[in-house]
Image 1 (spheres, rainbow, N blue to C red):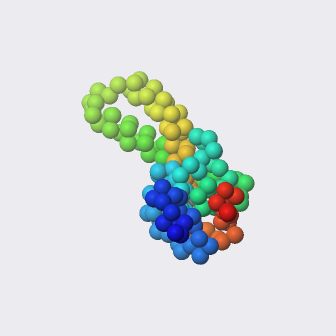
Image 2: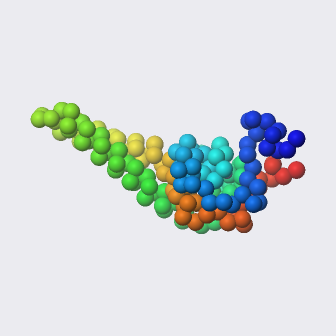
Image 3: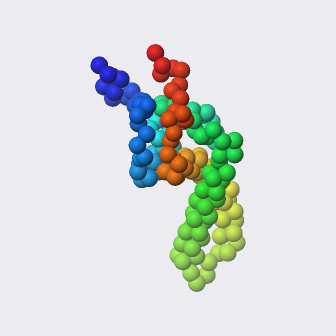
Length: 151
Ligand SMILES: [Zn+2]
């Protein structure tokens, strides 16, 4: 029995030759589900806002060896929150036109902006990682298997 057929719930481990450039839509689909964009492995977050050093499934370094790696995630988070605010405010003004409640819109927008930053941040991190993997594919030296998977 090979590790791939060991069980349906067993995580898929990336093999050393598994460095074909994945399609962006596959990377993004894994990212929006808060999974490792490279392998689709779960539980890549140490806390709600902090990624583990390595993917527990494939061993990829999640910060890709750069200290200020997640500046791009901040940008993605800002863009996501601004888009949410734009569509919510425009929709609310459209629905309540010609007499929109501007005070309610102001306070709701402020609350949405703060909660949106917190809610979107984990998704921004994984999405940024996915886009970075599409632009700069994984190099073999970035893939370190976790100690628990080496027998
Ligand atoms: Zn992985």
